[in-house]
Image (cartoon, rainbow, N blue to C red; front, side, top):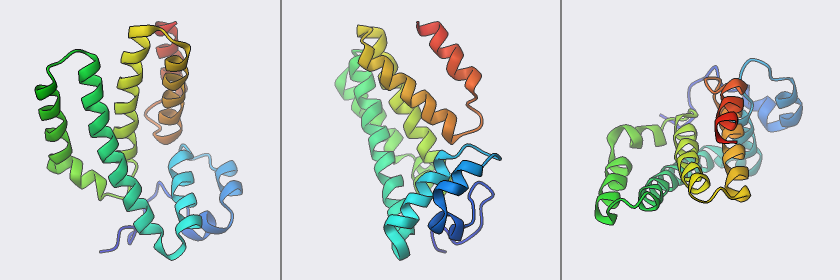
Length: 162
């Protein structure tokens, strides 16, 4: 079975994503637009190889999430050996590997949450404006990827942090 061989209700028609991406995203109201934007950019950049581009992005996101978990645990002063072990368990977890090969936004949300955790630790440790901007950007990305993360969540987290 090909990577994007069967239809998903989260995605717009591939012809629309390939030829009218910005207009499609502008008029998209049924779900958050960021995942469709990612697939649309892969369609434009990858052309006939868009599926391989998306699979590569998913694999890179999985690796980045594992590294991010390791760095978060190190920043929390957890034993480096234990941090590495936890990261390897997450990277080699069969469910995580399945998500990397699943052409939905699950891996993207997983990676964004890992990046969010690292940014949150950095912000709480140093209260730097750069960490706060990263944190806000990641929360905004989560809101634009998955409908479960509403604008209210974004405002509530910022209210607690500020």
